[in-house]
Length: 249
Image (cartoon, rainbow, N blue to C red):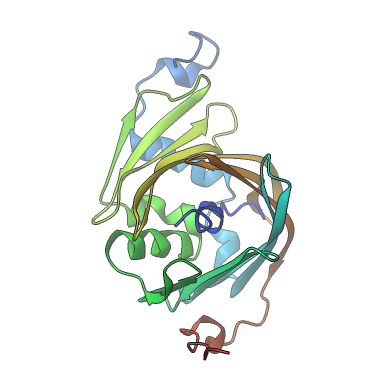
């Protein structure tokens, strides 16, 4: 999945309700503003061109909870008109899903049940669910500023949003791809700090996708491994609608 940087920290997070060596890279010695850093990221990811001729994107993944011998599956579906749907399941433990039509989003999980999302939680889902995903991050954010590198060999930008906590994205100085994301996941229980590491980038028809993501939130670390990516799969509107509440047995 990659020259689209499609991020799935939300799929994993749904399960929990520096300095660079001088002279090593010429770019590191020059002042760089957030727009320049982000522009390099967009180019490295394949640009917006490959997205223009597509109608939908489907991703299937393996989900593991590190150190607990627990695993399951996850999937996500995006459409060019803004619809989004994600699902995650660990057999005999829990199932979560969320989705929406690009204007309004819903979520369903064992803790908080079926509900419409509001405030910061809705905004975070809208960012993750947007077509072209992180390629639109700068446009979706209300602010962007360069901050000190979180890790050596990266340059980092903090993106601010209207109602949700700021997100820090760190890009590799050599590849310019996103390798680290930190922020706070919003839920009815409050805000949970998280760190997501992205790696194993692969080119899928002109778009660079990270095939491995490790998200640490609280005491848990979720490992998401992409198993399949498909463009232009069927995506009828009913797939993104609010599910009907299940009747008690």
